[in-house]
Structure formats: C-alpha cells, structure tokens
Amino acid sequence: MSSSSQPQVYLTHEGTELILNYGPKTHVAPSSRVLVVGGGVTGFTTAWALLDAGYAVTVVSEKWASLEDRITSQIAGALWEWPPAVCGKHTNLISLDNSKRWCMTTYRGLDKLMHTLPAQEHGVRMRMANFFFEQSIHKMSGQLEKMNEIAAVHDIQGFKHDPTLVKTHAVNQDAGVVDSYRHLAPVIDTDQYMGWLRSTVVAKGGKLITARINGDLLQQEDRLLAKYGAQAIVNATGLGAYETAADHSVVPLRGALVRVINDGKQFPIVKEALCVSHDDTHGAEAEDIVFIVPRNDRTLILGGLVQPHVHTLDLTIDSPEIIRMRDRCNKFVPGLENAELDPVPFVQGLRPFRDTNVRVDREQRLKADGTHSRIIHSYGQGGSGFTLSYVAIVPSF
Image 1 (cartoon, rainbow, N blue to C red):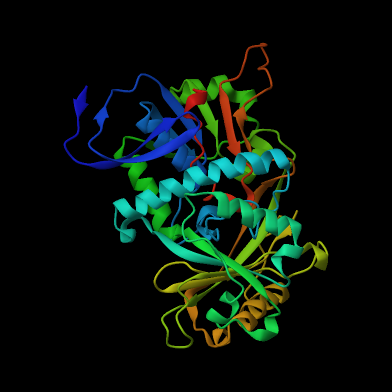
Image 2: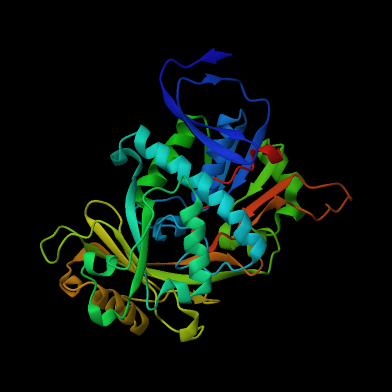
C-alpha cells in the first residue's frame, strides 16, 4: 500500500451515490479486474469510479473521442437537465424516479469539479439555464410539476420563476413565449471533457483497448472474462446494447447540432442557455424545440431535433429539418441569423434510447450452463447521458 503525495480528484460511493473528492488518496493494489465495454461518457465515468474503488479496469471500445471523428458523447447537447430533458423522451415513471436521483449525483459532482479544477482542464462550467413556455406554466401540469420539483431541491442553485426573463434575454416577441424559469446548471464542453475523462482513467491505471465486440455479451461472457483477465463486465455500449444485451427495446433518437461562433461580433454574446421544450398540445411530431447553449467561451450550439427510430446519419446542414431547426433558434434570439459558422459547423448522432426505462442493473438471464451472469448493464440514457453519468454501479460488485 502506498500513498500519493499529489492532490487529485477521486470518486467514492455512499450507498448509491458517487461523491467527488479532492486531495491525497491512498492507493490499494487492485485484487480483481473489470472489463468495461464502451468508451463514451458512461463507460469512462464507470471506469473512473471502479478504479477509485480499487478495481483494475480494462476499457474496450471500437472508437474513442477525437476531434477528427466525434463519437456520440461528443455530439451531445450536454446541458444538465432535471428529467425529462428538453431533447429527451423518457416518460416512464420508474425511469424518471431513478433519473431524478441520478441526475443530482451528477449535478453535485460536476459542480464540485468546476470549483476544484480550472474549467480549461475539464470543460465543465456552471451557467444559467433558462426555460421558456408558450403559455403560463400554471396551465401546463407536467411542466409545472417539473418546475416545482426543481424549486424544492436545495442543491439546484439559482432557481427563479420569472416571466420577465423573456424580456431580459431579448427573446423575439414573435416567438410566442410568455412564461419562464431559470436555474444554474452544468454545461459540458464535450470535446474537452471526454479528453479529460480519458486522461483521468489512464492516469489512474486504466487500460484502453481499441476493438469491437460483436454479439450478445452473455453468449461469450466466459470467453471475454478469460481473454481480458476480468472477473466482471460492464456493458456501456449505448445504442449497441440492441446487440450486446440482446435488448430490442433500444432505439435511436437522431439528433443534430449547428455550431456557430459566439464571440460578440455578429450578435450579442449568448452567455446563458435558452431552451423551449416540446409542447404536447402541438402534436407528437411537431418541430417546436429550441435549444441554444454556449458550449464554451467561443462556440454556441443550436439544436432541437429529436427523430425517434431513425438509424441513418445522412443529414447535412442544408437538410430541410436542419434549416427549420436553425430558423427556430434564429427567430428566438434576434441577430442570431447573422452568426458565423464554427469551423465544425454541423454534427449529428444517435442518442441511445430505451422504450421502457434507463437500464442500470445486473444481467437477469442465466448463462447456458445455468449459472448467474457477472454482467452489469448501464445504457439507454437517451439524450441525458451526461446528466446521468454519475450513476454509482460500484456497489453492484
């Protein structure tokens, strides 16, 4: 046993909650190894927690975060939200109940990270998030319930219900919004954070292997455990769980973002997130979401596209639905139509959604020999991957 003399960030768990800590940490030689399949935000956060809990960890992924070929976690909107999210589809009561607990674990962790290390290192910033509505929120039972839940959580900072936010942010009067509330929320620069997360895992001794694992993990569990010298497997494959968990309730939610330069030259700098959720009274297929979020100190992302069961990534910045999406954002904030495109002007991806609920549990099926599996699943977070990333699965081991 040896003690590191250098302060560091590390995770501990209390019950089902991950706690971020800062300072010297005593390291214990790991006695067992866990194989994590999946190199997105869920896989890497899980690997980090396992390493700090004293396990050796191997992460296997076909692709890793990079600026040349972004993975799904990098394309995410990455604005922390109280469930259900603006661009999410989770309505299952069990899923929402779990997500409301998990999201606060993430909120506290990211808030502490931001106050512990410079944002330039990890890309996490606390920003005011504003949510707008086309009618009084008191007439919208679902949104009113969500707002009251947020107001009741002490750890969510800066909450205020204030219809005058519409004027404060110079929202176009033709946008038709009349009510609003706000609160502080973590906003993640996904390129920066995924790079930092990977470096953190490697620095703690995590082993990364670039490979694709095809097929149902249960059917090859013993072979995988032997190959990687592991005693357990975490399945964090996102949309790939359709295959790796034989879970045919996993479906894609196609999304896309337009990226513009937010330097104040073409329009006033946007420093706070501005969002409009889908209004069910418009019909299930209505395109009415507005998602305007400062990604970092220079890039503003414009979103609001949710297309369930679409598996292709064939959109372009000139696709009709992308033109309409940007037009909604342009009309919401006067001057935004003059924005200069970012060097990477357009990204798209498939959010891993599950028809029933987010899955964080042990494999329930028995292996071919009738014994219990040592696979733990963590997938189906939909558009809330970062919001739910601090799920503590360590006690499951």
